[in-house]
Image 1 (cartoon, helix red, strand yellow):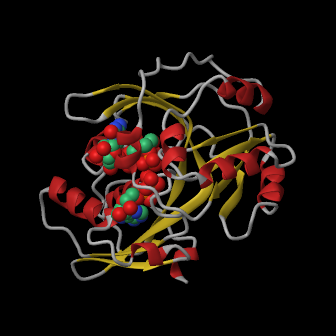
Image 2 (cartoon, protein in one colour):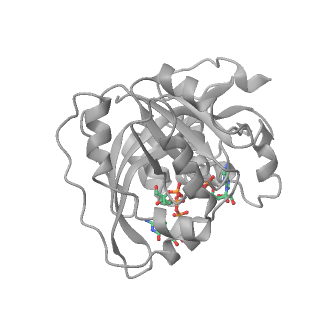
Length: 302
Ligand SMILES: C[C@@](CO)(OP(=O)(O)O)[C@H](O)COP(=O)(O)OP(=O)(O)OC[C@H]1O[C@@H](n2ccc(N)nc2=O)[C@H](O)[C@@H]1O
Ligand SMILES: Nc1ncnc2c1ncn2[C@@H]1O[C@H](COP(=O)(O)OP(=O)(O)O)[C@@H](O)[C@H]1O
């Protein structure tokens, strides 16, 4: 399976004539406050975003035109997708480059559940932008890639760097996250896909203020305590549309060593925090095998 290969990586702005690969890590919203709504209907958010070790992978190799092949355990859910975000990212970057570029054969190894609140499609699009930026030797810097990314979805800019980030605006206002301790995480999805627009539309009640966050947390227990005082404002509407989410949160909270549990994004994937990656990896195996489940570490800053 070519995507499991450790592909060569080259720095600089010269085109490469061999395969490049980029991981597309799952995005987790540790809290998600909906703080307002723009005139165009998009919601203003305040969210502390981290990225898990669970990831898709995007690989590019020389080819004729732009093409995409799908592999991996979750690829079936995308077979009927008319316009994969990976190809949309490729078209957008080629258009922004404004010149003839070599053909790119893209491969997507899909391991993250689709439409599940962990931004797999957004992570794939961001990984495709990074991979093609290197493959075509465009030398485009992070901020330029993030501006392009926003045209693919509100969650795509934060996935360009895929490091802990405070995300505001509709998703385009990015700033450094507070200092985070090492911690572990379990992810669980009851195998229900949820479409993001319906969850935002079902949200009712007043908007939340942005969270007040410290400069850093000393350890995982302090982080969990602070998060317990915050919330995901999309969790109540998601549970009302998809009641099994409540059972997932209950099961995560009951795992030995779980420090707190919450839904990510617009759901249905939920997460629990643990003191370390090993505890999380072990606890994930105690969840129902019929669910999509993962346990491990979180990508550190920078
Ligand atoms: C809710 C979040 C939280 O991180 O995550 P997911 O549940 O998708 O993982 C994101 O804001 C999702 O971002 P993304 O999935 O890229 O959204 P988009 O494709 O741009 O928008 C899909 C739809 O979601 C709604 N939407 C999205 C983002 C936002 N800030 N306000 C919104 O109201 C709009 O109805 C929009 O038409
Ligand atoms: N590579 C991709 N991976 C996942 N979804 C994709 C992809 N390309 C296009 N999509 C579309 O984007 C929608 C949202 O996908 P996803 O990012 O997985 O949701 P979420 O952000 O809720 O986790 C899917 O329902 C699918 O129609």
